Image (cartoon, rainbow, N blue to C red; front, top):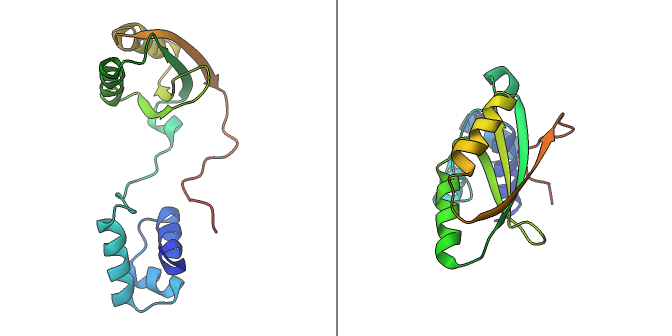
Length: 151
């Protein structure tokens, strides 16, 4: 990726609804080469898709929980089963593999504390091999960005 590709990516991260004409003007290219670059970025998997940024609270899911998960053991089959189960849970927005005391960090969103309890009891407790769950609730957001840092 060169500087123009990075400019294109940043602008599309900031506003995925930019027309090719507007995008081309902002990065200093004519529309045809700009569109060709966007298509190449899509084909290479750099740009993986486009979507709406939705306000979590206004949508009705104001509670964010970060859950640190520790597995009982790290056998390949157990890890694969856990990760597949997590992929099926709509409440889990992100799942990161960690170093340190916990094995995974989940970002979970729900409507309220009762919903969170149901999520833990009915869904997380049903996943085999979990040794511990440690939850922290977020009570505010200082920064939320979907745009990668500039060079």
